[in-house]
Image (cartoon, rainbow, N blue to C red):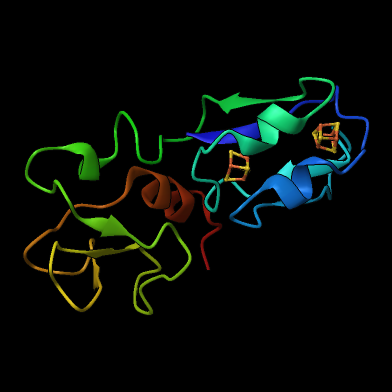
Length: 131
Ligand code: SF4
Ligand code: SF4
């Protein structure tokens, strides 16, 4: 999932420094003063906690990150780390994962041993306009 900012936002900006992912930016739309980059949000809830008007909540249109629906929460990939969109595959744009005790990151979509895509990245790539 990602978090989402509703029109109740009054633009105080308190959520911006609270986000450890740097995912909150001034809005280009008209609904709220700020918006969350869904693919960068890791659902930590820190922004929602500091918002004085309860304008931030889960966005049901986005796949969960590190929760229900994330392949890394399954038994097969238990203990793997995720780049959480901080670094992406240079070929497909997918998120990078690292096996326990491994010293390098792999692309979960391109690597022959995983062949699983982060549902959030999958949605992000599917939503991109065709070139
Ligand atoms: S839930 Fe966490 S990662 Fe997502 S926008 Fe809020 S503070 Fe940032
Ligand atoms: S903390 Fe709440 S009211 Fe303030 S900018 Fe963020 S979403 Fe808007």
